[in-house]
Length: 414
Image (cartoon, rainbow, N blue to C red):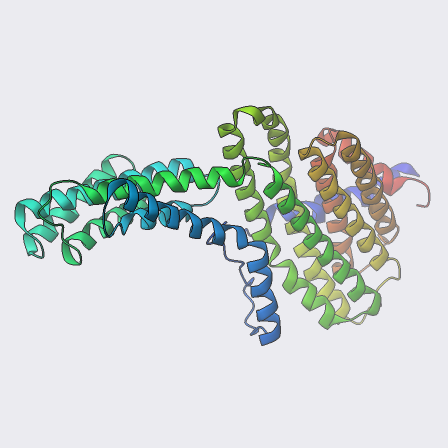
């Protein structure tokens, strides 16, 4: 009997579960994609979405404002430059880089902008402002210098624009003191210090918050799918699919948060011991990415199933809802592990384990001969998502996880 049951289980895994591998991959400045939908958002929903983004992203706004202001004050008081435009400008440019890449990008930006300013100052002194040869020489030297130091394309453009500004808009005075060069260094230095002060006390807090938000969002999608299946509501299923298409942006934010936390920990000598926890979480993000893709395929199959003539099995919504509980527990486990709460993390991981296997068990009972393709796809994606969750939160190897999932399908009740 076990061998007979294992056959359909293997088919679900091999034919449907692995379909996720073939799926198309579709802090300041991160935009949530609309998932390819042509539907125009309602004004009220757009306002709420904008308010939510501002509520989650208020810290970079304050950080940029204060850093630019402090850079202006330092350049004015320390250097005595009456119009230190490039001090706040350099601060804003550096803080505009993604967290996790700021140190490397900051050095590039500071050197690029400062070098562009210095080149412009020297060339204008030699050739005069607002002449064709001055513009040609400044752009050539600035771009060549930025490329030579291996700067990114964005940094090259920033350096060239900074130099061009001096040539065309604000040529230097007769003084040979490179005020603007010093201003750029001051602004960049203030930005680097400000970006690290924010995370000095709790460098992992933004990552923990992002983990919770990502898993709560994914669980919310599954809850919507379950409700749509319970009612056989194709419009609700379509809304869940639209929401699922946005989940990729959450995974990208999670990757950025991991990079930012790593940068903050490496610069914080007293908290470097947390790097081990961060490495253990990095491996889980790949499985989270797979789970997000699985849920999107599951949502698409739910739309097809609710639109078809065949009735939706009564237990299917319950299986998806149980899987949503597993997702929430997995997110809580990873967040607790990051904060060093091993006991709490183990408790949540056990809950995620139990719920994921229960979802597979309930869905497995529905895998019978003659079922429709959309139903088979949903069952396969429940299984695949459960596997990825278990791989993400448990220390078991792949073979052990697959064996436990197979046991859930072929266990009592089949």
